[in-house]
Length: 110
Picture 1 (cartoon, one colour):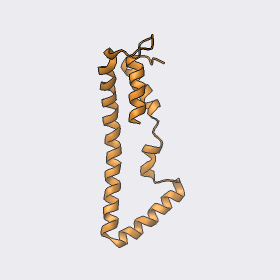
Picture 2 (cartoon, rainbow, N blue to C red):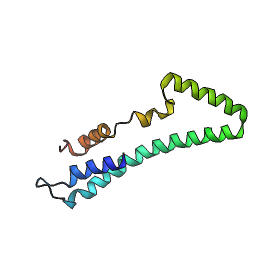
Picture 3 (cartoon, rainbow, N blue to C red):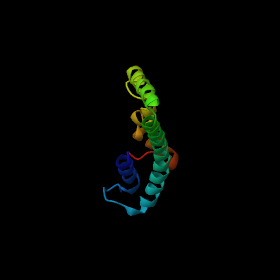
Picture 4 (cartoon, rainbow, N blue to C red):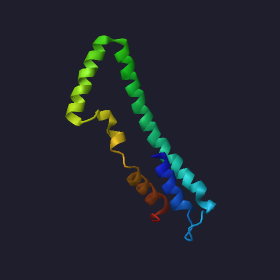
């Protein structure tokens, strides 16, 4: 995600019509990058923290471990993954980036 977003922003803000790199758009590209990535990484880190807490609870209690193991198996059987993974597996960074670019510059440079 990071590399894809950075590459698209650099292309949209720093690539001159003649194909040369124009540094003047770099600050704006990095400002948008930072705004986008802070929001996204905050969400991912929150999910990771929740998963870590679950793992700690499993380590602390063998009863909870058995309960959680069966809960995980059931969720994977129903959804093909854990529902807490949906924000990662369903995230389309290009779609998200295009909506940000539309807002930021009024039009996407292709």
